[in-house]
Length: 280
DNA sequence: ATTGCCTGCGTGG
DNA sequence: CCACGCAGGCAAT
Image (cartoon, rainbow, N blue to C red; front, side, top):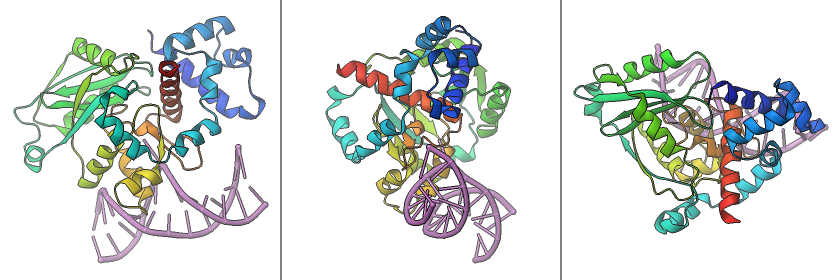
């Protein structure tokens, strides 16, 4: 459970990326993160759910391109949304945007509970209100107090209190590996019209699938806006549940991520592994 | 797979 | 308004 384990995994993924040409062996990778091969495999499996080798298979350009080839992700997602039986490890995520009035009163008469919990991708900072989850950020290094500050900044007049056990329960549900968990989440976000439109679009991408920034731009009828889309995605306040990790470059390169490119890769491979498990 | 030049767009002044 | 910068795209290699 210590967060250092995720750090090891992140380091391992980075090492693999830097040495892709030589196809590093398990032994090499484990040496790079200062663990014995045996123990490394154990730790890795414990966190990610699959072995490092299998994990790597999902990180190839080929796999990413394969994901992109399901080009009609958005049509597919509509069908899946209608016949909810066929979802694979996904949640019903609904999204509500803050109204101008609510924005103006800066969170008055609003209670926000927050906490830091564990996830397969390291520690997460979660904040939740009566209206829904309003923030989910992964913790990179030092930032846990910064995150609280940004929460206060977004809702200056809200009543903000710590409730770690609540976010523990939430985190377990969010990162549940059970297929078709039937869990429902309501999100409560603030952002520009454009940003909200982009985020709503992301929620429709099913788990285990991916699309390019270009495809997202198409889906909101702004075919030439891929760069603007990328900017909007980069401001996503609710990681994972607004699945910005499922948007990758046209070329198959995973691309950047607000909480580290390695973490994005880990999520993509993790979801791919779950999808494969539940279909076999 | 890697480089370098290009785009158009929302955002912030 | 205008200038800026971008988690991108594309073509050439």
